[in-house]
Image (tube, rainbow, N blue to C red; front, top):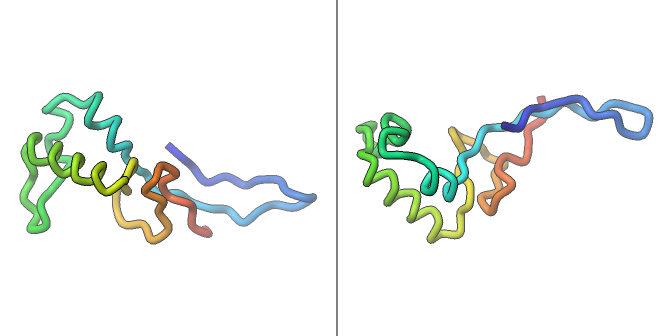
Length: 89
């Protein structure tokens, strides 16, 4: 998990930042059992996805070159692996 902190730079403090959580697509596909997927992913209409549907959706994300996905809305996100790049507090 990435957390916002104050950093000491050139005799002063940087602006505090906060970061959104992200999920490693490969990590979930490799390490999660079917019950770990329960209640995590939903269809656009709000219905919960079955484990097989969630795995298929994650495979689609990998096929798009996305290594990580945001856990919520984030407008400063790097899907290639960095995740949330931070937001000023």
